[in-house]
Figure 1 (cartoon, rainbow, N blue to C red):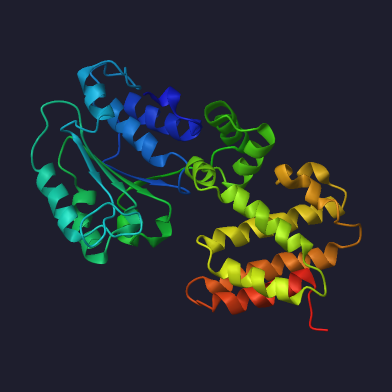
Figure 2 (figure 1 turned 30 degrees about the vertical axis):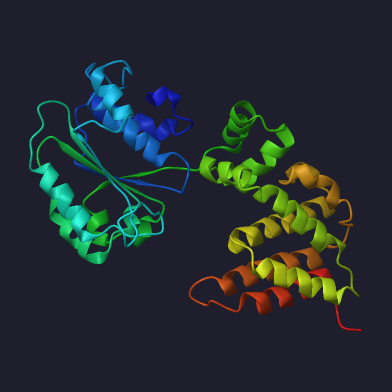
Amino acid sequence: MSFDSVLGHAREIDILKGAIKSSKVAHAFIFAGPDGIGKKLVAREFATVLNCSSGGDDSCGACADCSMMAGSIHPNLIEVFPVDKDGEEDPEGLIRINQIREVQNSLRYRVDRGMKMVIVDGADRLVPAAAHAFLKTLEEPPPGSVIILVTSKASDLLPTVLSRCQRINFRPLPEEAVKGFLVDEKGLDPNEAGALSRLSGGSLSKASAFINDGSLQKRREVIQRLSLIGPGDIAEALKLAEDLSKTDGLEELLEFIKSWYRDKIVASEGAPHLIANRDIEMRLKDAGVGEFNRLCSAFWAVEEARRAIAPPRYANKQLTLEVLILKVSGARFM
């Protein structure tokens, strides 16, 4: 592994390389950006470089230190992540004060060589007591140590935490980079890969999840059912609403339906080159010229439904979806 093998993030990596070359590595960093775009991967590689025996601005990948870092067994590597109530790793869990106390105890021991690296993944999941306990360590880490907070929600961090760290903002991966990965590494058809790259928002983990859980096919089926509902199909509209209300990842599904209406808008306005969901492009042919207002109304109805079911509103999912599908499909009581 090396910086060169990281997909994208050339600007962010250049910042880190510059700090290494100038011997001005900050004592604490925040790596901020959307989920699944490679922030933690860059953090791991940064930790590897700072402990590589070659002493350059990239890791050699061959020395004992690089091998131990790759295997997550290097004594200078400390990784922290959210856990559930049983202490098992859980992205939806929390980082608790006992975990931070363990980090602080580990940092008391000086390193023989290299840098002691603390990577806190999901730093926005720090409970308030843990975040406050960590403040002094973030402000003045022991010599020979660097702390990296990795987060997709930097706004949820305490202002005092933000002020103690150098922040590097990571951008989503370019669509073409994600598409190329899906074609070359996952063997997807280019049209399907293109659709996934757009739906994933530049996140490889989201794109991979779409493949692994079959959600792309599920989304196609939803679009097919929705597109077949006519003004008199009240029963089918209500059945679709009931089925969708029981679906996992409903907010993401509504985002997909929004992207579908967005595609219908650009298709109806004569801009087919802007269509995102090219793998289901044929279903856009019924979007006639002059439908701009109706399609925009449907788009915003989907967005309103998404907001309604999300925190802090927590509207009834089935009722919200019934209203939505009756509205966008034109189904009505006769």
